[in-house]
Length: 100
Image (cartoon, rainbow, N blue to C red; front, side, top):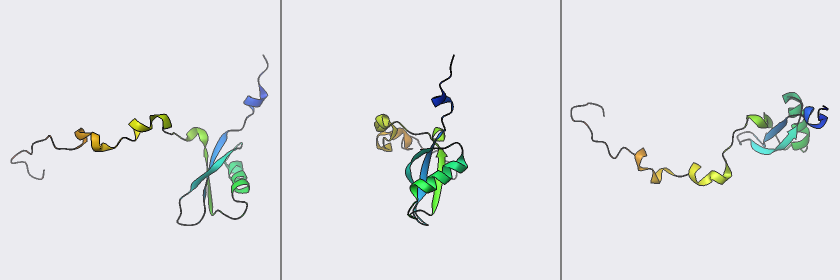
């Protein structure tokens, strides 16, 4: 069998984060393909900071990022308001137990 060279030699995907100036947070700028972290940093610098708009660049392998499912937003981000079991209102304070 012949191996598909377009997938076997594909470079991994990297996510790029750029910090515009000191004191600000890094912001996702985009994605790129590169063979390793050094080349990913160089390519990210060339692609996303061409006009000196960045002071710091992070590159992260896309496969290392874990993300929540946007379709499960309701249950994942539900507030604690409806979760009364998270509040210690059902417990009786024991008499004679100090520091409770």
